[in-house]
Image 1 (cartoon, rainbow, N blue to C red):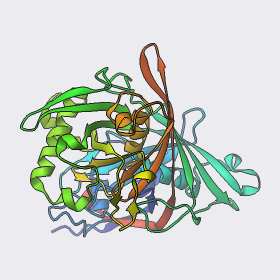
Image 2: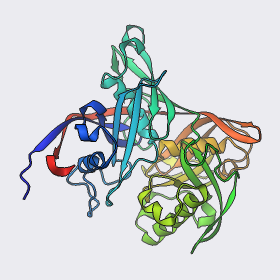
Image 3: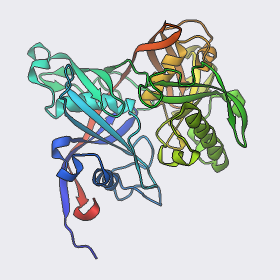
Image 4: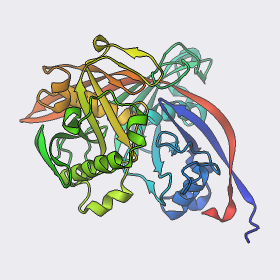
Length: 397
């Protein structure tokens, strides 16, 4: 029986957008966890309470959903024209791994606010008299991209209270505007916005059949299919999907087929330890529906409907990075997303998700016959829920 005492690590529990996570300064982590590796993974798993065969996270800070099983590390950036480096880990709920393959767009909001809270932004970067908008320049280390967070501050401190409402979050807060610069993935697919070179592909899925799919790497690699081709309407809520093991298995087959087609994995078996990317989403033309809160979303409120899977479950709202993919694909005529939104050129789109609606803007241009996205913009909010020290058994990492 272990008698090792617990260790205490400075940490902040924050909401960012429609997600929550445990935030750390790199310098506060145990020395073995200040570098990538098994020690860091095991520490974050223990903080969250994973892997948990009961899928409850009773013995950790996690909330037993993909939106609440997250850890973030921030440090002062050594890159020119950046304030902080931001690294994100998606912790599996019931399996023994941490996925570092992508970003969390929602917690990017928290990263901007936490950078100021934690004293990682130089005082010279604050607005005059300490009140106004502080522009935090973030290097997203998972995917090697720049994010600009426009964070409101008052008297030198992050302003958290406000009247900005975000569907999927119960209470209003101060608005933080995020800019994702050049958000197309330059990693495994060589920087092509459309890894296959096509706006629409035919995806052959064993046991499912042939599906039209738009596969895009913007914000996060995402596979879009038509809701109708799945027998869906696009109005689905979590309860209709997440309790159906057969349906979840079918959707995972489609995601894996997309991952193979995009070149993100070489064998289907690799997808088991790469649940964070790619995302799978289905789209449908605008129609009225009732959101999870009971709020009525009318057909005129939105341009299209989108539902997205995250870590094997239907997301309760919409992942921020997937919203970037939606906005980018909507801006490019011919994609399934653009077609569902009514076609034509556009620089912004408002879509319906299980919790309500979200507007995201994107600037896409065609250069040399290939589409490029220069920027995607959306608004979120962030708030500290608790700060102090998180305790973990000393022998757990």
